[in-house]
Length: 404
Image 1 (cartoon, rainbow, N blue to C red):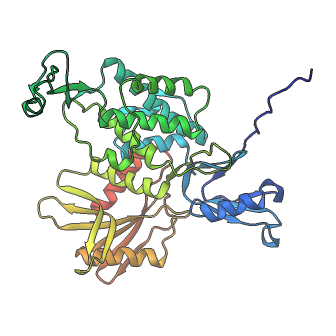
Image 2 (cartoon, rainbow, N blue to C red):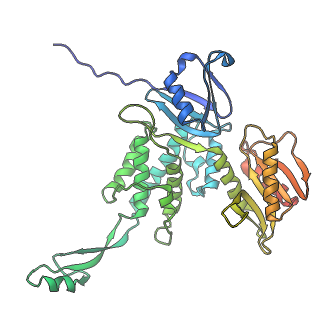
Image 3 (cartoon, one colour):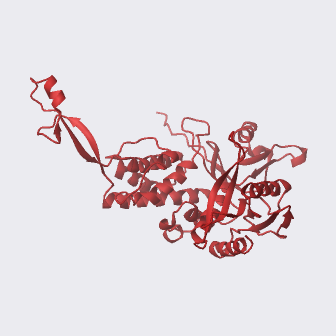
């Protein structure tokens, strides 16, 4: 009798790209269909140069300021890494998403790859969810209607008068339940993590245990990052705030399914320019003196028809409300200002009526910009992401305050 063997799953090839650093690959490393898909669907994340005499008949791939995991096909995944060590990203996340209580560095080992970065986030969420389930999930009272064996709550007199011959007594009452939006958000995020395909054997048991801890009493309900923003926190559900912040981050950076086959994988992609912007604003908000405030994503109306500028950040006097300086973060490959960047912040400053405008880069500039454009002083500065971020932030803050 012939012996049947199960076919082996295709081994996945992983290509590692570091942002803004071109990666040259042999012509055979990608199929034309894979290259076209990458160029068509993910050109914002990876710039693609097809094999040609200009590239030496090779593929040239350059990550464009995104970090994460991009499954291009069942047997091909791109790992997108930042220029700085991945552990620095966790420090940025703690500040930008108010996740200091997670203590990324203290709880887990060093991460060196994109999968480890993702797993570290999910594993922390799973561990905290298990701990929460052990101490007791948040429960709320939910209105119920039915015919319990004994009278509960309030008799539904109207329903009873319509059917006086029925022996069962219709009641309306409130019942405690863990099936709340707070817990549904945790369950959906864990469900997403389990079905993304990025968790390895070392992480899956913990994530599954966290999922099971909720699944028996919580309904699996699709949840978005925007849904989480509508939850109001109070004394009874306050412990969920940092958990939901992490859920928002994971859900917001999980994209539509890609790849061929019956079970396509979800990409996990972090937009570094947005994270850098959010980090800079959040760091300043936590360290500025009491007399100075910072506002993020400041809308500056231009007319009554909806036209407006949107500045990344504005420093202002808390007492008078006067704008002291406007800044824009520029997460680029080099800290060299271009004319459009200068024109942008000058327009912001003039619209706000302040005289100081800044361009903030993730690298220290070799020659810091310091020019006068009409009544506006434009400077550049680096909030370097390598090294001690608090020390760097303190130096940046001093510069902003001394010249605003």
